[in-house]
Structure formats: structure tokens, C-alpha cells
Length: 209
Image (cartoon, rainbow, N blue to C red; front, side, top):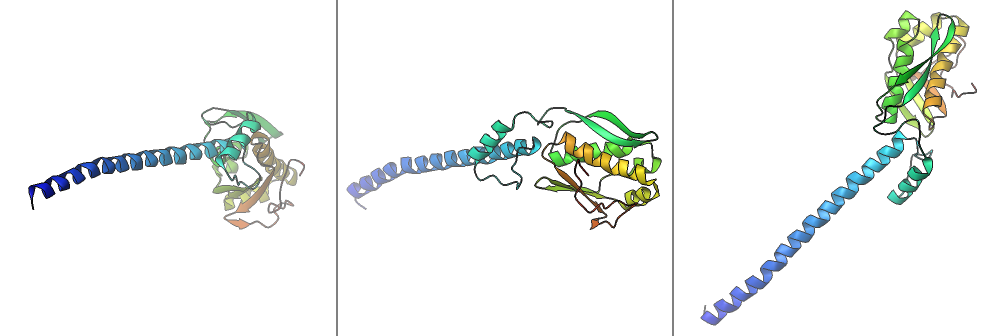
């Protein structure tokens, strides 16, 4: 290799080096923007879920649409980072009893589960104090509550009017405190329940039920 060829090769390598550095810098910058967008949109949709601002089908096409819905939804009973007061309706020896509960807001499903478990624990019925929600999920405006067999067995032993008060208290607690919910459906051990004490738990229960 002659001295001239060596110099030409050295100059070409010096010209290529800045381009490599630029390419790496741009790649890193793009990755940063992608990460910020991903986590930012995730936080936005979680905030909408907490406030019950998602559309009934739970589908939002763009981040811009999500921001618009969130802005128009206004303050709700469940807000991220807040400790909202919820009103519970439970069965007492005198019939329907009410109480207030302060919860640390998390996901909507988690908040509803905590609230319903408090409904059970606050009841005057001893057997009900040991009942907790097995699973809970929602589909649009419908809430599905999966309860243990102990709930079905205890419900069957109540007087019909008390059984009705208990179920309606659960429904009222869920719907009044969480505006995105309009109906409640009950399951026992993951299956649709047969009528218990004259109550069809597998049907959709609303405030007018």
C-alpha cells in the first residue's frame, strides 16, 4: 500500500466515523421517544379506567380520543391517587344498614372488590363476615362478581326479605359508587347460579331490580 492510498483510506474512515456516531445518537433518541409514548399512554388509559371514563365497549382508538374523553368525563367518585369515600349498603338485624368507607384508589376492579368485601364484613350475619369475592371483572358496563359456595349456602338460609336486602345492597353499593357500572351479575364458584331463595342471581341486576 502506497502512502497516498494509506492517506485516502484514513480520510474515508475519518469521514465515516461521525455518521456512525450520528446514527447511534438518533437511534437512542427514537427509543427514548417510544418509551415515553408507551408509558405515557399506559398511564392515561389507566387514569380513564379509574375514573370510569372508558366507552361502554372499553375501546379507544387513539391517545387523542382518550384525552378528549378523559377531559369531558369530569371528576368521578374514583380518581387515581385520591382516597374517595364510598357508601356501602349491608344487611343488619334491623334490615338495610348504610355506612361510609374510605378507600385508597387503585384499579376500578380492585376498588370494587375491596368495597364489596367490606359490605360482607360489616353485616350482622356472622357467616357473611367470612365471605370474600373470589373473582371480579367487568365487560362494558356490566360487573361480574364471582362468590364462594359459602355465600350461596348462607343466602339460602336467610329469610326471603333479608336475602333480597343483601343482594340489592351489593348491587346498590357497586353501581352508586362506581358510575361506569350499570349492571351486576353474580356467579358461584365460577358458574352461573341457580335461583336461590327466590332470587335469580344469574340475571342482570340494576338499581331498579
